[in-house]
Image (cartoon, rainbow, N blue to C red; front, side):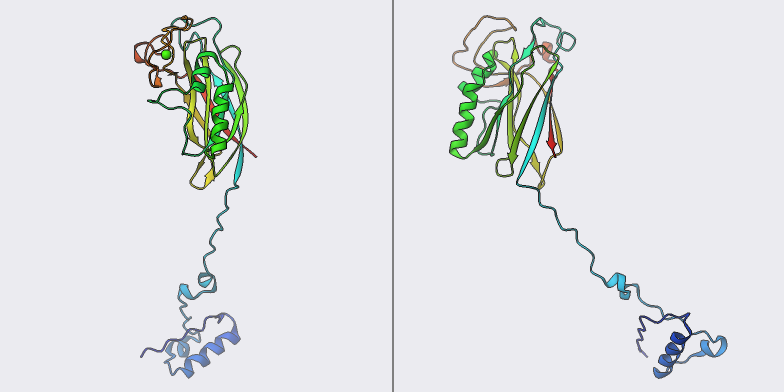
Length: 261
Ligand SMILES: [Ca+2]
C-alpha cells in the first residue's frame, strides 16, 4: 500500500521526536515490527531532494557587466638587433613614435592586401604621425573611430616605447603602428585588434610584430634612396632580405596591451 510518510524534520535520536515518529507510524497503520523488538524505529529515509538545502534554489552568480570603457597601457618592446636580423643591420636602427586609434569594425586604417593611405605612407616612409592622426580624426568625425593617440619612439633598437589610451565597448578595436627606421617604407603594427571579447575586457594581450611593406617605396635595403613605387603596391608582409632572408620572417618585437585598473 502506497502510504507515503515524509516526517521531514524529525530528529531520530531525540526521544520526543522518536515518540512522535512512532505515533505517526501508528496513525498510518503501519506494522512496527522493528520497534517491537528493538525499540528503535526504522529511521525515515528522507529523499535527498527534499532536504531544505537541496530544495533551496541554486544560487546563480550575477554576471558582472563589463564597464563601458577601459584604459590600457601598451608596451612596445623592440628586439630588432644585429643578432635577430644580421643582414645589413643599420647602425642607427630605431622606431618612430607610436600612433594609433580606437575604432569599430566598420573602418580599417591599414591591412594586408590594400593600398596604404597617405597617413600610413607618411608613417612608414618618414615616421610621421600627423597625417595618420588626421585620418583617424576624420573617422572619429564619421563615427567609426573614437580616439586617436600617440606614444613614445625608440631612439635605438633594441628598446622600449609606451602609450596609454582609453577604449570603449562601442569602439573596441585598436590600431597602432611604428616605422622600422631607417627603411624605405617598412613598419610594424596591429590593425583592428579587439580588446573586448566574450563580454569582457582582455587583461593582457601580447602580439609578435613582423615587418610590413607599405607598398609606396621600392627601396631594397634600409638606407636605399627614395624610389617611389608606381603604381603603389598593396601592403604586404616582408618575406625577403634584409629583414626576412630566404623567407625567414622573424619578430622585431612585441606590443603588450595591459588593462589598467
Ligand atoms: Ca616597399
